[in-house]
Image 1 (cartoon, rainbow, N blue to C red):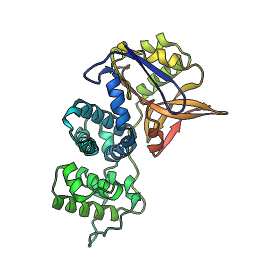
Image 2 (image 1 turned 120 degrees about the vertical axis):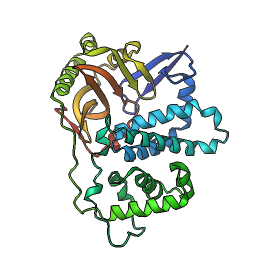
Image 3 (image 1 turned 90 degrees about the horizontal axis):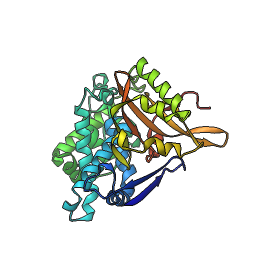
Image 4 (image 1 turned 90 degrees about the vertical axis):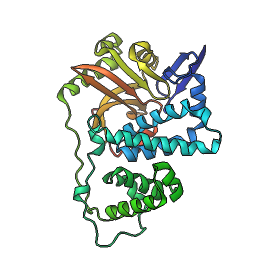
Length: 321
């Protein structure tokens, strides 16, 4: 067996996993998957940026990217040309994003910024004057136009590359670009108010109790808040039943250089792990908690993704000190 130890960029909680080699990146991830992640490390922040702008959320973007990495890893032996890996990643990420956006019932917040009804098309189409400020405005566009504008005006792909990535033709890409740029040019100077989901009072109470127990290091109490079949995802490290992980043990090893607080990332209520910085506490990474019937059934911990806080439009911490 092999010890795979990972530490986040802020020298916080250390996740040391004892693992056995596996063919699939499930449960505790094997050393081959870790090597694969090292291979694509130079592409990850760029890929996450694309997924974030497509889904409208840095955390949803990270989830889509994680699924993309799993899928590519399972098919890696089919890629004969190492130079094709970038295209495979973006094409797979694009398809995953489209699947995500179609799943309106479970992720309706991904489209809360979809303001196409408020956009008035100009008499003449906009020119090619779109600059990189459009990166945060593309959420107003339908998925195909959103992807084409992102890939061309933000990521500088060629028309041929974009056609291949989105499953279209060069003519189709040109048409989508023209429509998308025109709609962006016609956006009102004052953006529409973002409709955030209303906080769930029951979830808020559950999170407050979870944070209280977590910060007291009352691990038995924390476990009592989770369902027997609760699922856990720790980015780059673990995916499977919480009961089969050493999740809480690893936090216990973090000693006193961290604490957890309730916060919000881009308006979504979640937990934030804070690390001590001189005389204050700074958010290092988020933890998304999902619950049903007053019991936690899913935990997604993004300790290995320091870019998430930077990618968010707003990060709010309740009572950080």
